[in-house]
Image 1: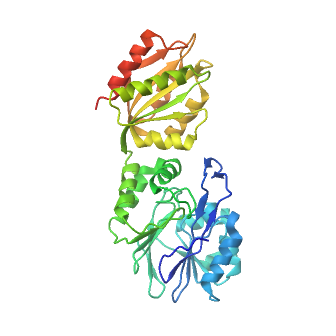
Image 2: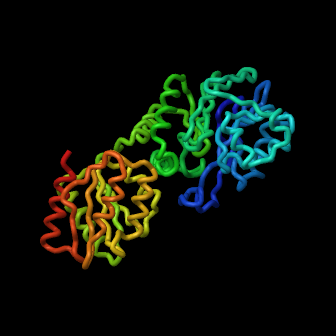
Image 3: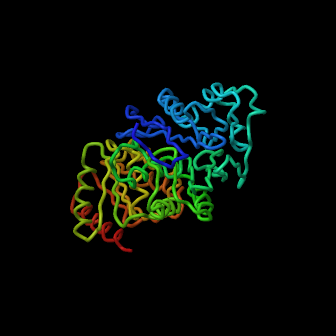
Length: 389
């Protein structure tokens, strides 16, 4: 395990998972994922969350080494999703005098996962702002419902001014992965937490009242410096504001003609001064990354073949993902292709109409099989109009 220094009293006991192929059964994680867990050593020893079953043995070894023969007094349960909570039952059995700290919703859901002996006597129910002193350190609890489950809460350690942020500020990738934080944190945020922007905003308002020196998430690196940068990113993302000035083109092409059209459009946009043009082939590229880019840029163009008097399924799937993530506040251009009955445009509009503050940029371009002089003029017109501020 890579040495992760937090403080003299707070020890990292999590583990990197480098062999997992899909996180949550759907997200490609080429650089794996970290399951973060922490031990606070004091007059009372506190474990901050357990980890996934895939790394139980390594986690227990790390925990026992950090305890150095001592016992556990409290387990704080920030979030009950199994990648963080799988070993609650293991720990409760191993340390029968250990108390479990959670909120009312935590203990409403806990029996659905575990049967813990004498749970009523062992549980400590905390509410908004409650504090527990463990010696030199004091833990204060703040509720963060739907960031991204109903029972989620974060813990503020008042002495060292550390926020244990649950899934907030998390990132794909193991802790020894050398890569920029923002891209994989953005992909993580929009795909896992993105639907709940209002709730993230509520949590940010609570954090703004605290003196925060460090953020310890349940996935990804511990954030120790330049915290304003990370918090500002979360503010942008959770406000559904575009992050970058650029055009994101997502396309779904059956035989390559729609793909050829958007590649021409890419060059047209660049020639007209587009600061950035990003592309995603929805039939092949990572869907989660396409979702990330749709939220990242302020202008989006969707291009799809028609299919069975509807829209080609990869585009339909993409749009339903965006709908489920509460996608909003964007300017969108549409391109449809069809040999005898172009229907993709109408179908895309029907889904987009269910989203908030979506502006459809005219014209909606119809291609009949392949680009011709007329449809190329429409692409030029779309490019001009979508680049207008």
